[in-house]
Length: 632
Image 1: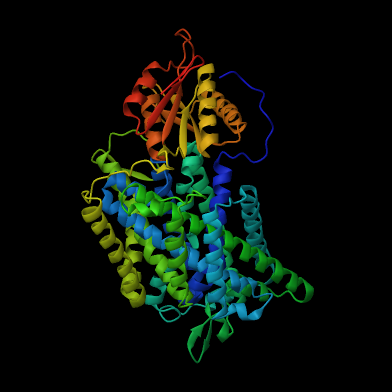
Image 2 (image 1 turned 60 degrees about the horizontal axis):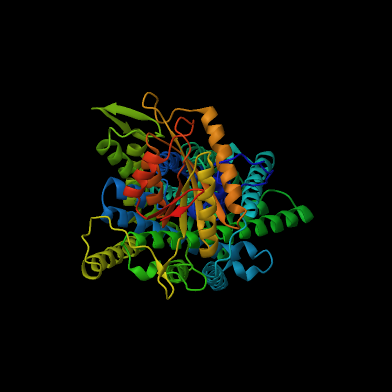
């Protein structure tokens, strides 16, 4: 592709590590606004320790998701890992548990929005107004997503930065004004406040603080360089969130210490508002007990209340999007009936999935109005999903021991020719034990969670065996969507592999024109073919720099036609195999490739061998374009 003068831009639409971090932190960081109170209700004075232990489990889970997402950069997270490691039955179980996570995330985020808006009207802190307003929030978000209004990416990044800065400011003020190690020690009566059963239950409940790690997996298809950007973004999220949860609970327990009353040991941090506590708005409770007064206190209350409500609204919307995405993906793999994959004729959004799983289910979860129940239900789904993710990484390491990995998480232990992932082994044991604690100790959560799983597997079995007439364990993809009276294929995703050549430019123009006609997205891909004498993860700074310039130019060319473009840089032994794998992971409907008529010997690899491989093995239609002609 001829070089073009590159234009100065602000935030790129390509997702690098900073953009992935900001997007994920906007979701993970939002959980502080409810996790603090939900966890303190169980853990009392050991709340800071519980968050530290939950953070260690999260660190192991983050390492598992980093390796799995780089290995399979496609939406689905643990469901995708399980599909490659085991079969469709296990994949469905992981996906169905994820669905429960998203349902509860939407419910609990929407439930806490009115609590923080109660700075304007006090009744919003309590039932029935919090449930009613939460249900309205869910309904509005579902309607917005059916219409297809897009989020403002720059605004989300800005809010994530402001959110982290605000939390850090509260920590700093707390250390200066109220932090007391003596009070923290006096808060704990081992085995009594909390009891050992409550302490053990508090650990999986505290994992609600790390809601949103699946976000990076779901955005991995849009990551520029998955091997570099995804692990870096996950590490940044883990460090930032851990820093807040390592400090803020200690400040909160210094401000609202544990006391012994008629009902036993309690802290205002975990008490409901009708008992004078702040379980419904714990961060506002911290602000009220920081020791500031007058106009400064009111200003802090308004600022934190509005910021928290906004962040929670965005987190609820992310849950709505996540629920619809996982439903759409499961229907695409014939795990759920086809109607869940059906797009609205006007808005081209999966309306049925949005209404049922992102709308009706969260509202049903909201109706009891119990934060403890929502917290333990999230733990039920999250611990099960995380355990399957850990088990999948262990199984992949054992079953595909000879397979090269672009990224390998650590630490590992060499056992019998296998690099055993210690992070996944220990993480899986921890999350599995945490899931059992929830199942054993919480009867309502146990029966509600098991009923959710039973209903899901019953639906899966009936659909697979009776309707689709497919084996339970085999992977089968649904055919491409067909819309309109002319049965015209809807190219939602078009993959364009590029090198620096005029033929690639022609392929980009062809793809952009097709995408403009069909409101599709173009994924521009460049593959760095790594020689056999080098490891697949070897850094090649000069080639990476040239590849990034090429991808920037290609994106600018596509977007000049009014079409959205994402870019991807891959490392592989064979460009053809990488192109086919990327098209399959994206569920692309079309691959457009350029073919060069220039003499051999150029620095860029010739397209001949690659084109032949893609035409033979691509999971979708392939168009081969040149400057002289376009052939399908």
